[in-house]
Length: 202
View 1: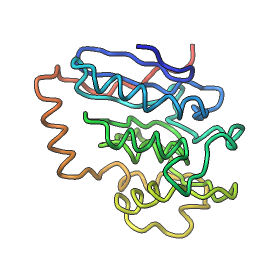
View 2: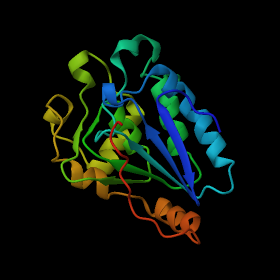
View 3: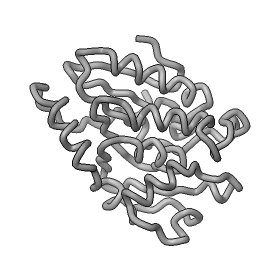
């Protein structure tokens, strides 16, 4: 199963692990990676061996957001055609449980990815922030709605202040009853697993 540069994919027993692997940019997601994600997910959805998907990042960082050097390639976040919104939708509608394993920074587009997962597990010291407003970028409506549904109405400063660990409990504790059922159904019969954080570069 081929994946785009910037991703690493491994399948161990019934667990697939998709890793963001751009440590030099704290795993910033390029336009090519956003574009490729729906296809990767479609392949994993069709793979009967895979029952659970883990999404994580290398180097002690989950994701620092979209690669702003390619921001002009991402499209318009105001509708459903932007690359980040299409990728987010593919993650939300993925038919198997998706668990975000979060270390370090989870910012901007990183939060967008994490919020689209069924469950979020954060290491101690993980830091969250939705900061596109600092760059004059409108955060996608679908992502904003999902953030409010999961974490509740955020304080005004959440979208402009530096990333912090204060949102960790709310962002990482919420999962719907429908998705809980999906987790139980798809994970049943899998070999027991525990979170394994990816190694740093080298």
